[in-house]
Length: 222
Image 1 (cartoon, one colour):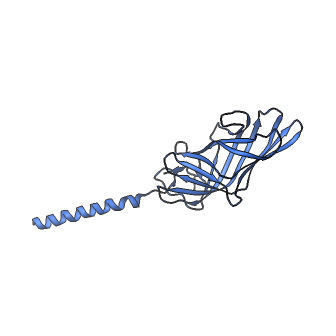
Image 2 (tube, rainbow, N blue to C red):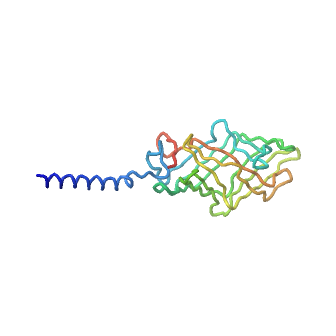
Image 3 (cartoon, rainbow, N blue to C red):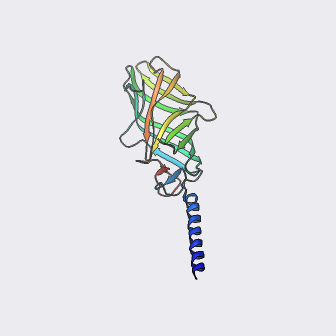
């Protein structure tokens, strides 16, 4: 009887250990999930969208700490998920569109902002779950990221063309489900003297949602 009980106890212990060893792999979350950190994994091909955080602006200023330049009350993006591995790791998205609207300028001689157009799309967006939740937005096949700003001035319209070949850095947060960029520099490649030699871009978007899923649930980074 004792031998049978001992064997049964040993068997149960072995099964418990085996279950403990398997559980983490079975329970592993993807880098990107919806609804909660333990929610469903975002599927490759899903489209992620977001507007500016309510009450905030996208800005293009003349320095990293300055307030001279352009601010936009409206901006939005759309990106397609191309890779979403198990955490820890990095998910990859393709930024397909980014728009700006309701823009104004406080630059002397500029009377209005006609348009801001992001060029050379698509870009590659790498979202990491490493400490700080870093994001890296890099050029696509064109080799450079570009932005064309068309301004109205007292002498007519001018174009300010900016480019960036090394990409820009940002962060994500599960508080508000946001993605943000702060004072990321773009270099002027053509334009008049009213164009800043370097334009510093800042914006925070959220909540980021998965528009391919019913109800457009919020995005989480694990």
